[in-house]
Amino acid sequence: MNRTRIGRNSDFATRQIVYRTPVGIEVDELDHFEVVRKRVFYDDVLLVTYHREQSGFGIFLLVVMLLFGIVAAASSSVPPLAMTFAAIAALALIGGVIRLALRVDVVTIFGRRSKAVVRYPFRKAFARRMYEEICASAAAAQGKLAQEIAANEPPPVEVAAAVPAEELPPMPNA
Amino acid sequence: MAIPRPAYAGPHCPRCRVPLDERLQDGQNVCLECLGDFEARLFRPPQRSARVLQFAQSGPDGAVSCANHARNAAVAACDRCGLLICSLCQLDVADAKLCPSCFERLGQDADADTTRTRFRDYGSLGALWAFVGLIFSALFLGIPLGIISAYYCIKAFRHRESRSSITFVVFVLLLALADIVISMSVLAALFRHK
Image 1: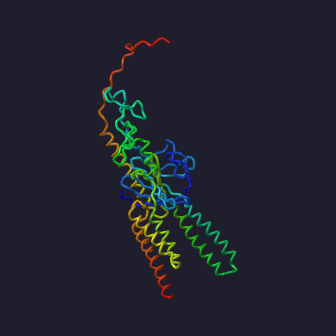
Image 2 (image 1 turned 30 degrees about the horizontal axis):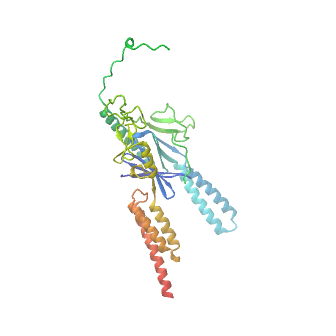
Image 3 (image 1 turned 120 degrees about the vertical axis):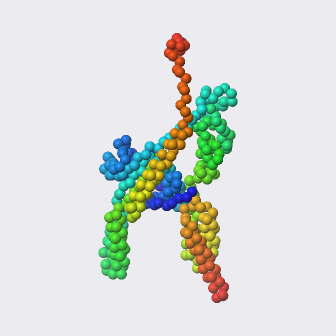
């Protein structure tokens, strides 16, 4: 099926790549050399959310900066080594500050049986566009399904009149 | 092996994962647990209702009850095991009518393409062996590892559900060929030297 990559959802324990297909969202979870695939179909979507949160990777980079800064200070007697550690600490500081300043935009799609999460550390406009497009696709798919169900609904069947209480046979004595 | 996570139990707060209550609305929302804000769009997906023919309604002639639901009339036989099933049990998978237990078995055995959820990532496997082959190419290991890598690349080309893109697989294939060429040239130089 034709699918387009729309983003990733990665943390220290999860590596997921999220794709968009004509019928829903497809999530490929990487488990070493195996890919575990799950889907959230548009006609199953219950809720789509969009929020901005602090970047865990940014905090990790600041911790790295701190550690390398301490090591650089401790090895100041060996200038080449101290310079190397200081350079690594500076790079981590720049990366960490950028990640913390930008924060991460998160789009979450909740289905009946599964959910998909996409994180955007940099492409904010793209994240907003994806949120809008996923909402529009889900609304369109559910509208189409509702029409299909309405079209296939059988005409109302005349229910046989219930037997009047008087005509019911008497209850057997206990 | 992936770290097991709690099973999905419906919509929850995207920040703190506490289940959301009925007060959720379209637009801006605030989670009452973590006080984090988020934008939400609610959907009410329509439900397909299965029309189940009752055994009592189906008439006395030729009516057979479902193997799983005694009160429902059977409308089909499972294409795999032949079990008589009602419309509630009938699962249409890959042009076949299956009963729930056969569907479950197909999913476990990954026999039907539509029920498969696990795929081998041949592109990454090829990349791993090509990289190891490149490191050890001076020890002539580039030849066997390059061949293994090329084998995985061919499998990646044939199994397109694999994650790796065509460009990546072509790059890995070239790297595998480079492994073989480097190892062979080292071997040739060694023989020439002797």
